[in-house]
Amino acid sequence: MFQNEKGYTLIELIIVIVLIGLLMSFTIPRFQDSLFTDSLKGAARNIVGLINSLREDAVSDERSYFLWFDLEMNRYWVTFSGMTEGEKLSAREESSQSLEGVEIREIRFSDEKGVISGEASIHFDKRGYVQPAEIHLASDDGREFTLVLSPFLRRVDILEAER
Image (cartoon, rainbow, N blue to C red; front, side):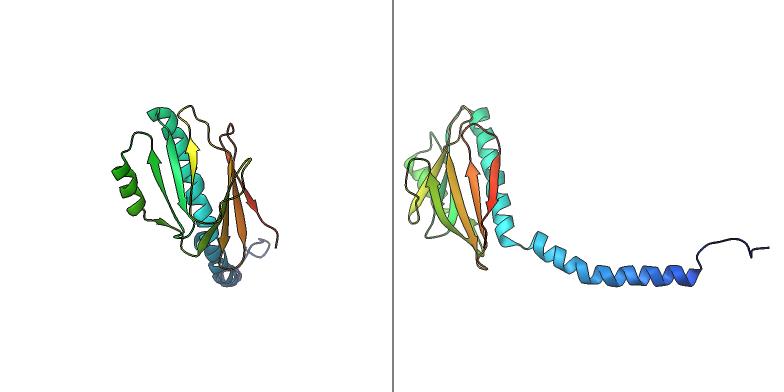
């Protein structure tokens, strides 16, 4: 009665499922390491998210924001127009925005030499413009990303340096 029907046996299905499971056990950790624990990509995503947020906040709050970078301490923080000197100092001191495994190599502005030490800030105007700048980030393993901020475009280009 069932001799002419075609299909897979339970044993064949179990073998295929086991093989898929074995392949997944080898490939998922690699994807997980590269996607979720890549400190350079994570730092770039965090900074790009902050840049987009600051641009929107500057327009909605109708005040200028500044994204500060301390290249020696390898951290960043935000201030805005109207803050007192004490509030600015407090924002700098309370900065928990540090980059583990990633170094801020340089902040380069148009028409200026790049800043490779000390502090630098990027200005976000209340009309939605951002100061043209490049943020150069490097990881411990030698990879480098450059975040390019354009004054009129609402996106941040991420360029990966060739090795």
